[in-house]
Image 1: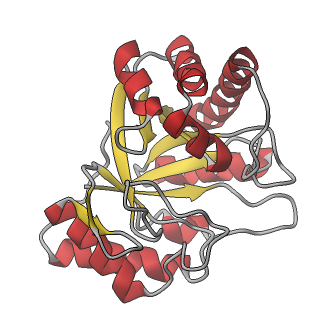
Image 2: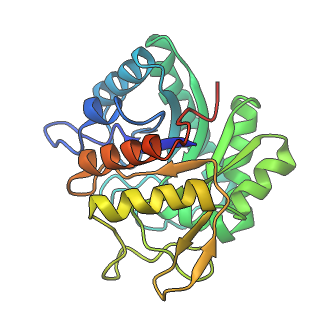
Length: 250
């Protein structure tokens, strides 16, 4: 099982998360591309640190919404979105290559992530950009999403992910961050959820029902309070349960 997290999200004098600590824990890093977070120096540092530790680098592409941290849906045409994603891929890959690595996969962020679950046109736009840039790229997203279906049609490897620190809806979607209880912050609960996802392929939804989640990667967000502690708890629990933790690509 792979463990991924969103990194490279600091900007100028504003520090968000602890990339250095998280990169000692995760096996894949979803690095911001400057559209929702991250400035050039932050992105270069994140890519260099990931390369040093053999952590896979993924481009976390988003709507161009720096002010809203990429969590607001922007009305972009599929063509506009395709070009915006391509722009972000090229920018991040430059830093990855200078650091001695390269981007290995694509994962949308925030509002774009949720949009590509159900919107086939936007999902296809993201995948088209990835395929144009490098057809060997994998695509990381929610199981059974339009994004992963588009990736499969295009011949890119679809990678389903689950979330250890987010509440689930009965249909397998994520509870909106605007609702209470949408983000889990107890290390024990988050670690137990990660182990259940890895071993049993299931998670308990917010209504108490059990949802099947077939995933090859587990996400632990880096901007949650106590994120490093949560990630360490997840990694320790997976190790203790005998789950092999390794990157899904490369």
